[in-house]
Structure formats: C-alpha cells, structure tokens
Length: 219
Image (cartoon, rainbow, N blue to C red; front, side, top):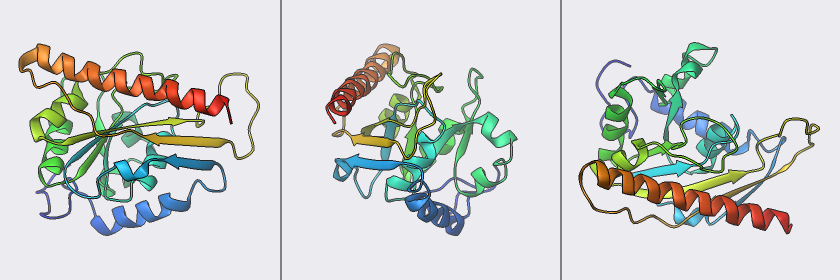
C-alpha cells in the first residue's frame, strides 16, 4: 500500500471509502441464502472509538461474515496469500491489510495502528491461521495493537461456518456469532506483560467457544 492515509476515513492508505461502504452493505445480506445467522450480544461492540475485534477462525467465511455484521467500518488483517489471487486488487481498495505469516514485517501492524489512532476498528484472528477455531494458541499482534493504541478489545466467536472433513454438504446451516464484553488486559510492560495480555485474549475466546458449543448442542 502506498500513499497517505485519508483523514477521517478510519481506513488505511489506498482504500476507497465508497467501495468499502458498498462492500459492507453487500456483506449485510450476502450470506443470507447460505446460512441462518444468529447474532448474540451485538450491542457489546462499541459504535465508535478505537476497537480491536478479536475472533476465532475456523473457516474462510468468518472474516467476510464479520465484516458485514459489525455495523461500522472495519479493517481486518488478512493473510497475504489472499492478495495474490483474484481478490488481490479488491482487498486493498476496501481497506483490508495483508499479513505475511511467519515473516518479520511491521508494516501491517503500523497500518492497523494508524487506523486505531483515528478511532477505527481493526479485526484480528489471533490464532494466525484457520483450524478448529478452539483457540488453543494465540499470537501477540492483537494484544500489542490494543495496548499500544489504548483501544478497547472486544472478543467474538463464530461457530457453524466450518464443514468438517467427511461431513455432508449442509443446506443453510445455522451459524452462531457471540460477542463478548470488552476485555480488561493486564497492564504489565515488556514481553511478560504482552504475553499475559495475549493469554487473556486467548483464554476468553476459548471460554466463549466452549460456551457457544454448549449452547448449540442444546438447540
């Protein structure tokens, strides 16, 4: 991405605000023919101010689904491989930021930090990759962003988007999205403080996954 950030957009450089807003509008209804989406406690997500939205990740659709659900401009950290395919030109235009997994590159965090300092929302999948979505591990980026920017951390978990190996194709499966209350991260400094904050994020998301799985088993 090149160029200066446009003040007031809460989007990174190179984004087209009008296209971002159009994509969000499309995201509000795009998945209706494919999923029965049930959102719980969406009111826990602040409508304004800097927010780091932390989410579990078990299917490709998690990011686009949340993008359409949050109700405000949202910049997600997306694996760089997505920018090398058909979506490569569209993702930067709608304000999404590419991350090279396993590579030392601070540019994505710097771009996300600028968005937060402008009062925007940044979405992060702390697991760093798709899996079972049970939050067995987490990386430090989300906690670092929140602590550096003084942003609110809001956890959210999705269940039902992933079709497990061997499972038959499902017709409009139920998808549950649960927003948690904002997290209080430990205030300690240095690597130990960052590790403690990251574990707080991981543990909260893991607990919410268990809570949502238990709820889904009863419905």
